[in-house]
Structure formats: structure tokens, C-alpha cells
Image 1 (tube, one colour):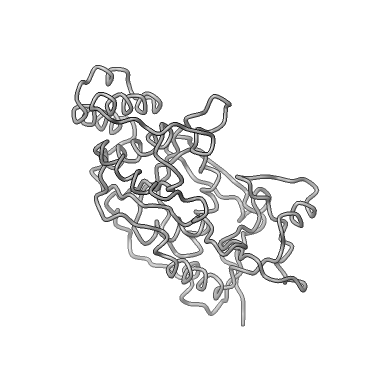
Image 2: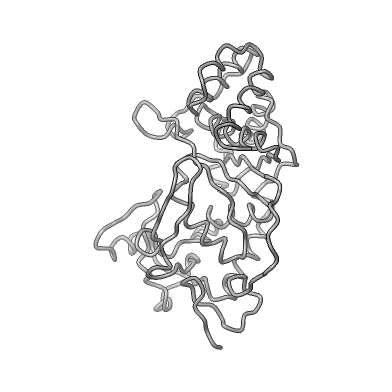
Length: 325
């Protein structure tokens, strides 16, 4: 079978259905704004997750758009029983209601399987038999990215007698590996997938779907146009943009908000003991929202507002003036 190089990835030249080899000359029509908040049910919402929820909701409302809640509950060992219901109850108390039915990633395995099958058929994915120790030992310099070691491409040309453990997406080489995008908060961004990341995992050795694949498939199928999330995920964006291109998915706009930090200087998270939100009174709810707004740099004048709905109306207007709408 003849091969062609498309955006730095090698695909079958006669694979007419491959999204990287097909082109539509029809002028695009700007879709209606569709955003999402996608928590993982590993514990209750805390100050940090409220900042992300509020920012994503404000951005959707400022653009007269749709706001969707998606429960990213794929990593079953980390999911806490009852946490998803607790998160949804907290959002309800805050007045943040999904405009469409909740989507649960744990019920979408067949969709991820189909995406992996397509990528495999197009020659973009290969099995990998390396352990984390073997990857570390093969590197002259260990480069950790979100606890994932940069991959040196050991199994690109075959398993060499090893048993397949994971499935990896080939990234481009040379200039094609440099991904550029503009973040609406952080500004212009560049990442070299070949030198900074390497071929990355789409299905893990434990059989779990990798975050990168699941989030790209879900964003595509939910027609997400805008992603507002924490700055800890800025590093994942270039990988997701490349995977979107491989799957023929449109690239959303991105906005990464500053993280709320714990006392030890690390990201505030459930893992380092972030306290759940206390929202037992209207005053407590309003205080939590005002704290989140302050972290997002919204004006102190919002602190004078005495009612939640009035706060939301004013905050939406401020957001619209700052980020468009």
C-alpha cells in the first residue's frame, strides 16, 4: 500500500476517508458556542474546581452559548463512590445547571474503541511493550510531564518480542511536530511534540483509556467549540490539537485559567486535602462565588452585590467585556 505524509504523520495514500487527506472547500459557518465543565468524581468540589466551573459557565453565558457538564469518570480506581452525585448537587446549589443531559465517560467505551480502531487502520497508532522503567532507562534525561515519561519511540518499528501493553499515537517529526495555538488567557503557545512529549498513549497498559483520547472524542461528539479549564492542562493542549487533526475533528478555542494553589505551593486538589465547599446558606454560596471571581481577576465591585442572581448578571457582563461575546 502506498503511503503519504500528511501533517508529519504517515497515512495510507489511498485512504480517501482519512480526515487528514480529505478537504472540504465549503466555507465554514461559525457554530453556536458550546462549552463544558468536566470534573472527575474523585472527591467533592473545592475552591479550585469552583474557579474552573465558574469561568467555564461565565464564558458560555457571555457568548449566549450552551454549557454542558461531563463527568470524566473513566479512571475507576480513583473515582470515589457518591462523589459524582455530590458534585452535581454542589453545582445545583450554586445555580450552575447543565443545559443538556450529563454525559458520563464510563458509558462511552465503544466510542473510544472505534476512534482507536480508526487511528490504527490509518497507520497512526502502534502497540508498545515498554514499561515505565524501560522508558526511563532508555532516556539520557528523564523528562516528566504530568507523571508521564517522554517516550523515545522504542516500539515505533515493532515490539521486538515484547508483549503489547499500551497503544501510542505517532507524533510528527521535525517542523511538523511544532504545534502552535493561541490561548485566550495565556496568549500564544508552542510545543514540540517530538522532542517534548514523544508518541503518547491512547490506551494504557491497565486497559484504561487515556485522558487525551477520551477528551478529544467527547469534545468532537458533543460539538464543543470552546474549552475553559485549569492551567495544569495547558501542557496537554498541543497533543489534543494534533489528535483532533488525526480524527478530523475541529479544534476548539482554549482558555486556561490560573490554578488555585495549596499552602505547599502545589495545585490545590483533592489529593492534597483540599476542603470541600461549604454551601449551607445563601451567604456561604455567594461568598464562595465571590472568592472564585476574585481569583479570576474580576473587579472587587462584585463584592458589594448581595444576591446570587445579581452577582451572576454582573459577572457575565464583566466577562463579556473582557473576553468577548
